[in-house]
Length: 333
Image (cartoon, rainbow, N blue to C red; front, side, top):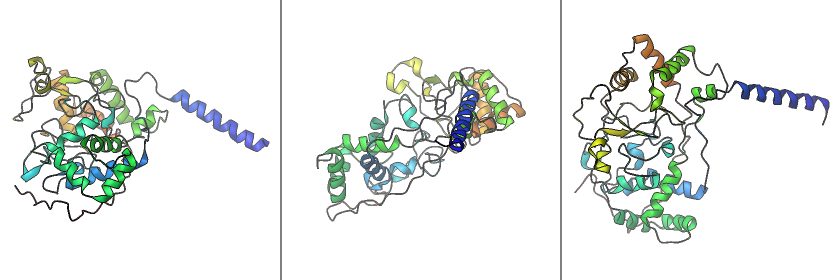
């Protein structure tokens, strides 16, 4: 190797070592890890299913309807709109980085993305189909039969493989390299001094007791309203619906704070439209803290530094329906 090349290599090694020295360690938050990319054919199949409205009774609602990848993986509605314009009972959580959660849904009733993917299809207030009809419809579309055969080595389509493919696609929906992640990795200028002050306050106030780890949440269940009760007309009662234990009433999975500036409105009932109001409420109800306007603005600045690179999704060309495919009546009976 020539001397100039050796010198360049030496400089690169020194810079890399210096960067590692400046990386933030012993922090309660870790950078978003890149996903392990599995079978590309399975992921592509899952993407098509994620965007395909034919998995709903009306033929108009897809997974992307409530977990819109152009709006932070949610729908920016207080509660989602389902079949026959029904208003859902709870705010739609983001699908982005959802593979990092300990469970799915606000009450944690699905243990993983595969279990979650089947829920909305058969929910009468959401997609309002049945698993049997969804499988029958997919089996009537020759291109889907070919793709399932190629991925699962059988032309027979079943709901387990449908949800497995959707989950494989959803596992790729991560948002790395947020400014705060770059700061964690050693770039001192990646976030503003105001955001850094907000992070310090976020830690010293106790917010990190629940919002920690790479997803800043999603790893535990907590009661909504520890110091003060949270007043809402929303009927959702949290984990008690799963466990039957009264102690779990009004206990919910802690939501992620990743991309939180994009996923308004906030809380399980979608009753709060701004981060400023959300920070004020959570400070009072969960921590007994009454943040000053300056402190509130600092925490909001930190929260905005958690917006990562959004998935670059090329919309799929969905397989055309065959003449055997049922023709749904828009929002009909």
